[in-house]
Image (cartoon, rainbow, N blue to C red; front, side, top):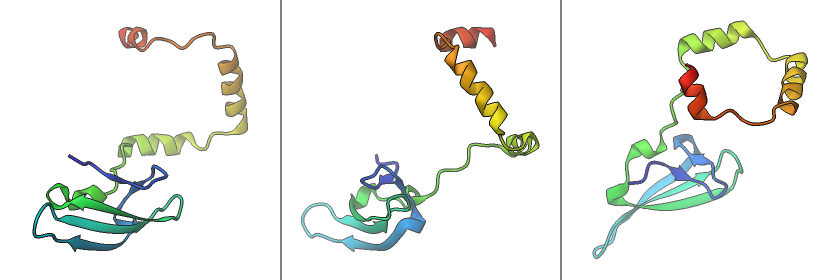
Length: 109
């Protein structure tokens, strides 16, 4: 089952990108839903044929935001990342000899 529609550049196509939608009905064989869209990333025109039995309007819904309201408030209180924080992270990464194993970090929590 299809979960989303993508442009050739890899960007996900959502409802605001769709310019036209039509139906390609056939007497013999499967019928299709036809979408014409303009990609919001690369601005190219594209079209897609989707079997009518696989078509669902939810394919064009935006992905919901994964950040909760409490996380948003916490990030707002932290403020923007300044250049000194970026430089500190840069030097920390230079001294990193290996990435910690995910299995090890899960045990620590």
